[in-house]
Image 1 (cartoon, rainbow, N blue to C red):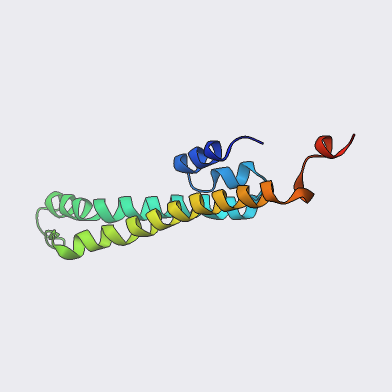
Image 2: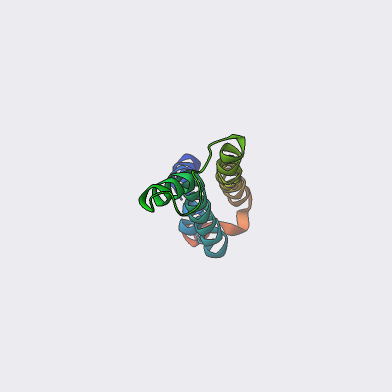
Length: 116
């Protein structure tokens, strides 16, 4: 088994990546797909006013109105970004706790270490 910090580094790249490499497939894939969905939501929330303004300008001012950038705009970006940050922190804490549990539990040792 590699060091704990190797797996923490994997989770810094993408939440759930270390869980998948340790064999916790369901948990790892849920975290990985949730992080991808939250990234897509954050990008869409940031680009939505730009898309609406381009659509308005290309239509010659006949479709809708210019999108305003106000406190609601920043809140719509902060919510998915905050959820993504919480998911990232949770995946790192979870992998640290799982590796600590496996190292303290003698039943999970490799067969080579148990056999004479």
